[in-house]
Length: 437
Image (tube, rainbow, N blue to C red; front, side, top):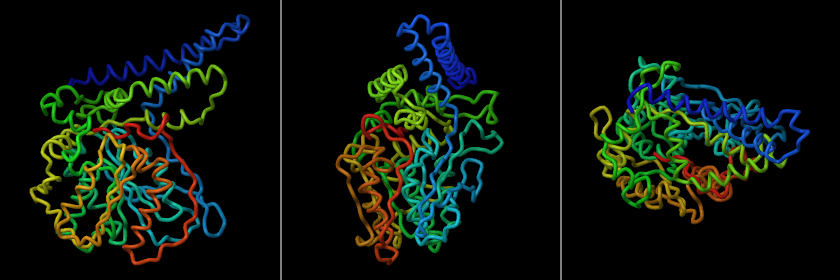
């Protein structure tokens, strides 16, 4: 698998399917066929439209498209994402709310590097902006990063996070979603040891695999079954010549997409068939629920091979964070060195990616933190997606997180303005596999 030919074969297959969809849509829409109003032609055109859109979205980085934010002055303020700290493998992006004074709450949202772009957290960002200034880690597609930029593994990821936190200062509140939770915890501990004044004010860990052995899931079972050699041979490919990162070893986005769609194949198959019928019946629209969700869900990015392999080997197999022996640049980090940062964990009762128990394990590692600065919350009916971007996040979890931030900043809990729902909504419920490793 570790050849450009394998990578280019997948891209060729994607291109071919997009072409087949476009061809079917065009042929089924010929004006002359209207003289023979057979439903098969309409169905052909509908299948082609959905197929073409599906395979085209796989190589498009979505825009943030955050709607204007209502302010205390009863005006809507335009939101503009700006790169504040550029880096080869990922930028620190700030969402500037035009014409609004700086907010007391400052939040860094650590988005996952696990197959999707940071824009999958669009609705999370949009829900926080009315009440805070927000920054996000915007990771780059590895296929667009030249080989000359070097490697990027879990240690580099951790150092990126420490640089971002140091830049934002001690009054920032960090929220880590899923995959980066253990590395964000390690980055905070590293700052506690080396630059205590640069630590964030609070740390919220949402659905992250701090201790993958605390609760078994299909993801953790896969990590135990497959050896690192098998993983490298079957999952790693070399970027083809048509991209700036030609020659870089990656875990391809298209391979990831095939993997985690197969985990919910029946749900996805039903959703696409229903959309084809909706297009054929004329009841679909460009921005309906299906398109909003899948335009985001299907947009995947390549992951640096060394990051993917080191995540599996050190976080899932080696349990280095879970056992408090994670090292960065030869230095073993002691998570117990965190003594001032308030830490909250959030889990979903129906989360089958990071099952309940995996994230709350972080609190046991914080041996130097007073119990008064520890908190945990379990949303019983929420799946993986719901705890950071779905209905459960909007209605229950977001208010609790903001209250947690205020309580540890010594501020009274203010009256908040409502936030508009933005971003994709999972079809058929919220328990959709969004971030499998």
